Length: 303
Image (cartoon, one colour):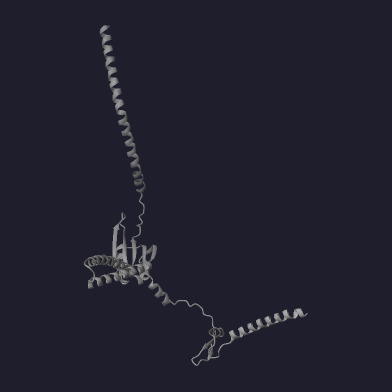
């Protein structure tokens, strides 16, 4: 027993020290100053600090993601770089009147008539294609106004997002302008040698040319983004004509004429092919007839 007392005593001391350390650690973590409450605990219990340093109880409500309002969606849509185009085919009563109304729709929506092509078909029906440009923010209204001009046969809308291309173009344009400014500063001071000045002038000309080309591309994108394109195809309805009594005869005659022409052609081929042999046969018959006549004459003379 004496041998076991020392190990048991040491074990009891170790266990007691471990338990005491755990208790002290938990007490240190759980202790906080009354004047400075823990943010985590305050949030857990729904407490908010006031200006006087005291904690005010507020109901803790779970935060939910708020949906964007209509104005936010419109602003987000307007910030995009979208090129919108549409094609629509309409059947209208009169082409001329419908074309004038389509042009009026474009003008009313801040645009214009870009191109117009019209032609007349065999049955005196008019058909044409109009290319209209309208303000991009009034694209949908203009499309609905055009659909009201007649009977809609087909409609297609295409949207092209050029945001990445536009941003890359602006980045390159800013770099070219910065390079152009530095080169102009070098030429303005003229602290470099003559060779360096000539090289800077040559490089400046190249940079200016590239900058103007990029500005032209950006202006093209700006026009495409500001105005949307609508292609409208208009045509009059097919006229209904009652079939007359002689129509079947005309149809039969129309179909018989090619057969008659083919028969005459076949007969002509046959005549041309047989003509040489007919001439040869005629020559042989004439020779035999001549020899027979001579034999009869000789027989009469000898008899």
